[in-house]
Length: 104
Image 1 (tube, one colour):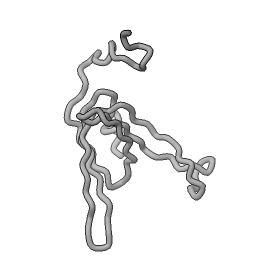
Image 2: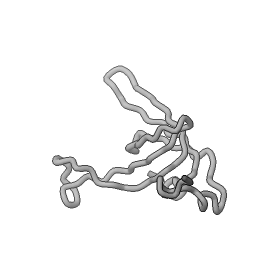
Image 3: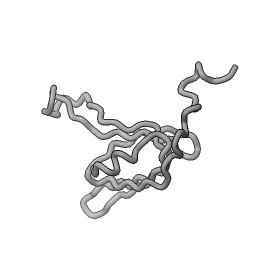
């Protein structure tokens, strides 16, 4: 994935991700639009991935969709990302991080 795109995947950014799965005689395309919650490379517990420490590192993007649903996408070579809107500077400073921060 392009380094410039990685830098734009910050919490609060609005993105559209297009992913495709190739079949024998078709291509299955899906689009997901949402706000970035988290983006990181994380290892998988795959036993057949012979990489560092026998783990395969994947780009994982967590999004909050417009209806509030949280989804995690694994980004690969066939994923296309569009950053639709960047968060305003300082936005999210007063954002609630967990349930304990919510008012009673």
